[in-house]
Length: 360
Ligand SMILES: [Zn+2]
Picture 1: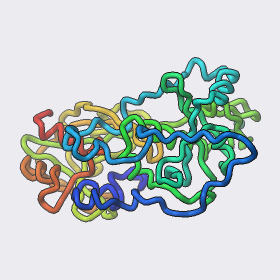
Picture 2: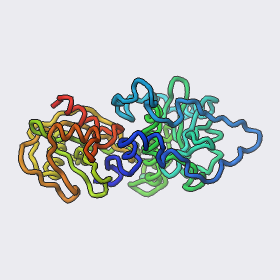
Picture 3: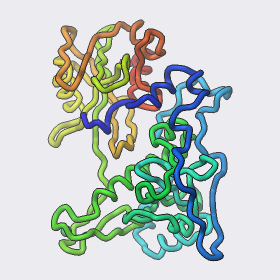
Picture 4: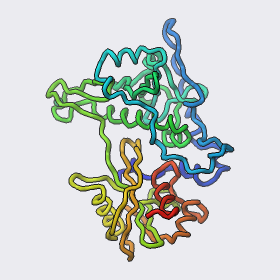
């Protein structure tokens, strides 16, 4: 699998799952990484900074709240954003949203969230956002929440410095904010890689607030891409199979996953991936849920896959794959046996939860 695609890479997500002590003590994602201060704003232009609690980064659900120990809804789903697909084709409408005093821009740097001096996400009016050294993409329209227009932009690498690791930030963002930054990250990543037309190499021109690119050379239109992937928990009777890649944190096992290929259905992709990864035939597969996954722009299509009993043979991508009894899987899910599942930030954890709850 693509390294960007993996489950819960890195120690940040691991600490979050493993121990509340570490959780309270903070993780690398909690601390701004330092760097230069934001530049002073020019002239007499008023600075519009937006730092209301809803858009701050904090543990979610808040520790001590009734929902603290409950499974969260799937992160990056149920977005409050209206993408305004019918209105954004009008350049005048986009320009008016850009001038709206309530308009907000989320600033990124190197795929992470840029932070202000207080360690909060840097959310500014577009006028103020454009006073930073933005990369060539510039402002991208995300959509509206009520009457409030939202934009995103990326600061040139290392031009700002204070930032929060995106994965860690998304894990502790309020669900609505996680949706905003997830969409923003995927679109900015796409724009950053599509400056030039893939057909004729002319420089693309943005349209629809930057959510579409038009080539002046050959007329081709380019749209943000979504990479469809299947992610599945294989099971037979009272046992399931999980695997791990060599570069994952020690002890972590997860569902299997892979990109879909042209010419196959979701179920066929599931069967192919299971056969490739562990050498077991799929008897039946059932769709459970999907999750946008902004690393950089996948859609994870989650399934429970009934497979034939028998020996599991991990392919070269997997360091290990093995059967887990229901009790072992429960212990893995609860991180009580020195092994653990990915954090409940990911659909992988939810698939395991659903199977443990008796779904097949
Ligand atoms: Zn072209």
